[in-house]
Length: 193
Length: 78
Image 1 (tube, helix red, strand yellow):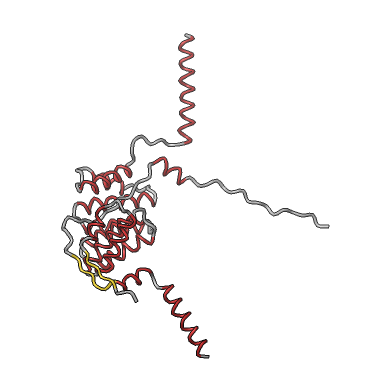
Image 2: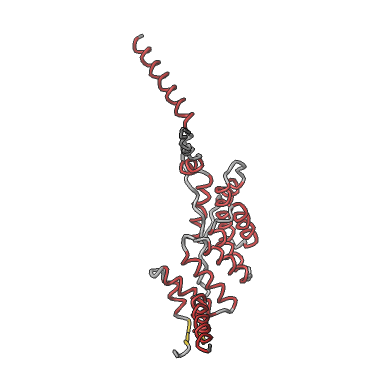
């Protein structure tokens, strides 16, 4: 009898404690839909392959009506990345534009839209987006300079392409790609004086 | 008078050069640029966005506590 009393007291105490903590914070078990979508995009970017359920995950994340502005923007970028990897450039441009609409300061959205626009042979718009990403202090500026270099090159502006490859190499000397591209260039300078 | 005019022109030229962008200077310095075709396997870099973990996000959305507003010190008027 005493034991049962002790147990029930402990259970009540536990419930009270649980109730109090439940009021204070909400604990999320496992990754959220936003994080799952983010991981899917990162993996797609690395492997060049989109998993079977990845788009559904990102669609569900985009559909969350109560998501914050930040979550919405990030999720559009990540779904756009999936579209880009699948070669669905129109859909990718739309998603990146939605991300920019939600958060005009999200630098990666400009970079990624630039990539999608460049794939559509819209180099002038792509260059504008890469420049915008750089003006927003993007995290991996070397990558954006590299992308802009490619867009300049495709637009026929070899001088600016060369300068951007050089900047990318300067910002990240351990990254081989910019140095490899620079090796293709033959550059002359005006004689001094 | 000629000396003053010369000095003004020199100052103007100097400030113009100072304000010109670094890229423009390098661009005008480059005369000939040719490039071999870019290999087809060179791709642009896509940057997926990182979703903040739910807990960190919730913390970031919590409004900061109100700052103590310093009240003006009342001085007794004589």
